[in-house]
View 1 (tube, rainbow, N blue to C red):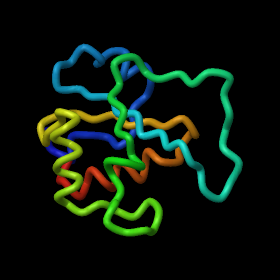
View 2: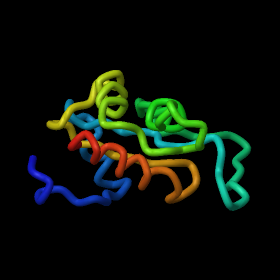
View 3: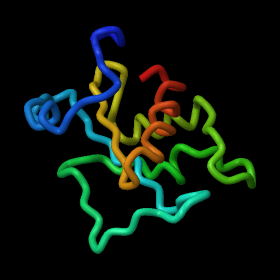
View 4: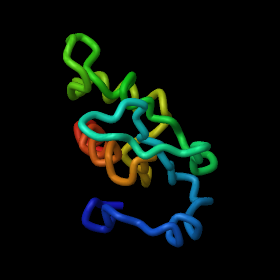
Length: 115
């Protein structure tokens, strides 16, 4: 499916209707550390069933620098997406546990790899 055929946002209803599609991957882009504000706190974190943990701070950050949360290299993104088992033909749904905090960053990271 071309990028022009996709919306950047989906509803929970859409996700429920499409969750059985074999090329649909739900990615949890939550980060443990929240910078610049008090994080939303939950008694218990809930994840979408069968979602893949992106481990954004580990797998999608350039670890060759001492600076925090730097953008990964294209090679790092490719390795991380291969490890997750996602490719250019897949439909990806990203979410995080802070509303809209780290999922937009994850979306940009995936754009590096053309996803």
